[in-house]
Length: 251
Ligand code: NDP
Ligand code: 8X3
Image (cartoon, rainbow, N blue to C red; front, top):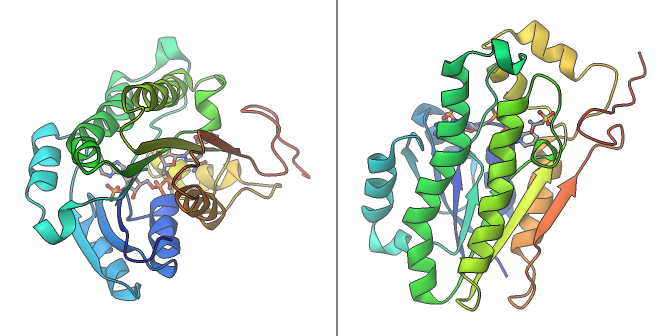
């Protein structure tokens, strides 16, 4: 059912977004891919056996987001599926000691960036009477963990925005879903720890985290349900994780 559908994935240069691009390409979809590191997108596109259009985009830049979507060639403008994946954690610190620059990056990307992309893409879906928005939330949107208040708040916001969009588009033919993973081994922790790869590696030590391909498989499954089926939410955890804070480590 995904053959020849147009799928727009934000944050496709790495991790879950990149795996989603590969999985949707295997399912026969045509892909619009963005992220800030445009060089990586060009390399990825060359490996995908489908029609791909890539463009550099910082989702924090509201004007750039609307210009990018409005400027799409008519052949690409009919977006069927939006995967709002671009996001990050920055820092892991008690709230009263946190760096406001980190807070700004998380809120500007995970919350405001997702809103800007939603605002740019969804009106076209409503006009066409069909479309599917799949937001990438997190277990962190369901529970707060120590030192992660702002990241968790940003993902709780994604959950509420998803619910709100589902209510506001009810009856329009647009479906709205979230896929909320637990721990996935990607560049996420390197980014969170500002490039400290050694510290990032410790996050995934002595347990089996999800892979970005595991999450992509769930996203494609959500997108591939018959049109009368709307998967509201998928919470996907590694078997070694029971909640945002409880892990089975075999150290
Ligand atoms: P990665 O760091 O591997 O990938 C993040 C992606 O987001 C990159 O492609 C990055 O591209 C893009 N991105 C970040 N900021 C921006 C921006 N301002 N504009 C455009 N693109 C941006 O991490 P993940 O794959 O793990 O993260 C993807 C999503 O999954 C995030 O929303 C994250 O919160 C969520 N998530 C991750 C989990 C995990 O354990 N890894 C668990 C639950 C949810 P570029 O830097 O090139 O712009
Ligand atoms: C990212 C995973 O471990 O920070 O959402 O909850 S975690």
